[in-house]
Length: 295
Image 1 (cartoon, rainbow, N blue to C red):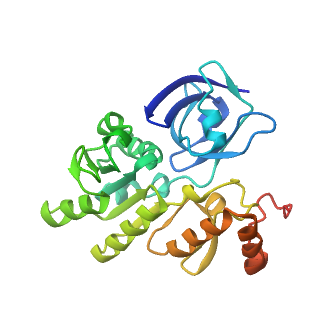
Image 2 (image 1 turned 180 degrees about the vertical axis):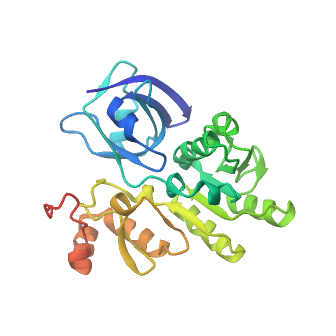
């Protein structure tokens, strides 16, 4: 059992929890995710790691209550425990293994949309701990949905907050903020790392391609099972079939077929759609995950 040692509401329907999971905390890195299961019959819920404390043996998760399982999960209080807390899963951020001499010469901009701020935070924090200064944009529809602003400001060189309705910070979406930084403020970036809703990442990539800035995205929003065995997170990257949960979740954003991915997500919501995808995609519908060829 994995005990909840801290719980905090970050915004309406967005909850932060620190979970006592020493083994996971010892081995996880920014960019990875965990699978949470409330009880023996509960749904498997993939959540990206928001933070970790190796000494305390805790892992921080952030989730939005969008369905029955996450609504039930939000009712858990400090002292209660989850049945399973599996991880770390997925590949760690490529920044972790990059040559320090190369990395320190890069001007990096992180772009966080909504709940995507949670997986952005540990990467920015890691960069700070290694002595690298980076910029970060936090964007949301309105002020009430901005999360982890103070935490991000403590680790980023510059943190820019924007809201679609102008209720807080810069008025406009994250793309408007990027354009302002690059075109009006003369900022130059060698790499953009964008995490948020799939539609947001798509339009960030369209813009950064025009600006000539390499871009990495995290496709964690499309994950369901976390092992590659369900076929939900199948996507095409540079013409090749990939699975976000085992090959990612991070990919070269300029190579991701976002339109195909979003269309698949709509189809995957229905039993008929899943059957059609399985028929159309044949042997590439599932990754196979553990190698058992799961049914």
